[in-house]
Length: 305
Image (tube, helix red, strand yellow):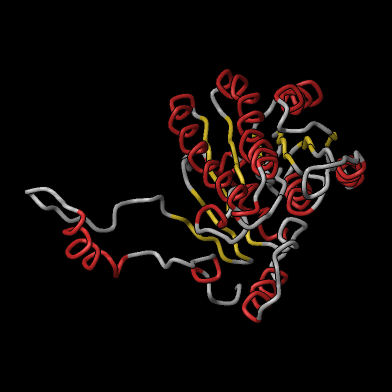
């Protein structure tokens, strides 16, 4: 049976547990040699345990695949570089990077600390930059390569108590877009995935109201392994003409997100005043306004398929 990643080398960050582990196991089953990166930190980014990455690598090897564990922190440029260098040293090349690593420090906006902000940005955004930057010289030299970045509907749509995480995840989309544009001339692709799945990262979602309980129950019905086929596709040569896109996976449903585009326009040739905006423009635009309290449950109100 043909496997879409035969002979490829894929580095996956945050691959010791949760979604990342499922991605590593699936891509290995599709023939890739995997660098399993995970420093084993707690959800908030503290601590560390090498067992998680090593166990995933051992499971891949035990199933007849190829893998090596890496314990680097993506927020540190040198440690991020080690992820890519391990791939080249141990398996001879690097073909795809899956930027999945992330931490959470949720807090309602008025209580969010500077440390909450900087730590989440360092891992979820700067970490993506660091690992991608490390792989770029190899991709340019071989005139091929794929970046798969994990974004979130917390950034694409919005979420309560996640200003730091939402900002980082929307910025990942902008970073991916720029990489796709800058690297297209050398045949390198860059795409994003917003995953819906119950994992360690989503287990912190509050469930104190009936609506929140319903949202959590929906997430619990969506397993992380459902995301892996799209990752394998985007990492493989099957997707050689797909770049600069934003996908979402929700159980057996794959969605394509649009980028921000103008939806209404109004011109006043003599120029605008605040009063004219209030009395003419806003009434015209109001039917197209995004709802003020919108979260992903409003955009995807139906049960996962």
